[in-house]
Image (cartoon, rainbow, N blue to C red; front, side, top):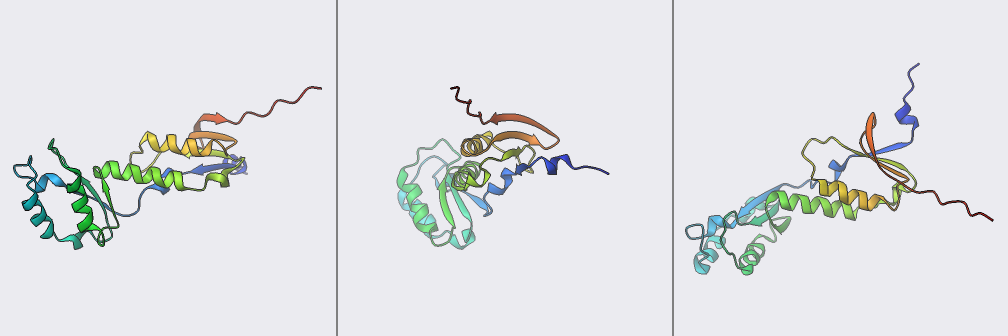
Length: 172
């Protein structure tokens, strides 16, 4: 009879993929609204934003950024937000990759990790998409107060990361 030692070990595997943002994150590049991709002309910018089809962003997360080295005033981002709110699920600054990472880190820190108190935890090492190390670091920070042991990798091959120290017996 084949024995499943992993199932018997009490090891809890956590796939950090579950913390990825489910909504689509789309780019809103301010470069497309600049004169010669360098200069923000307020009147033209306001007019272009008025003529933008904001319905295309319904239910999506808008990642507002500028892919050129232009200096963009803060109010330019504010104007995008003022138009997009009511359409986009969320408006955030940064490239889509930066916004996805920030949202994932927010999901990790907002999660209730207390359910793993005293457990042996394995943070899954392989994922469908590349996982930023910051996500593993954030999950580690959240798990350390709870996990008895924390490991990285797969059940068949893992790297020990942390083990709670047992209190030393008090000598009389």
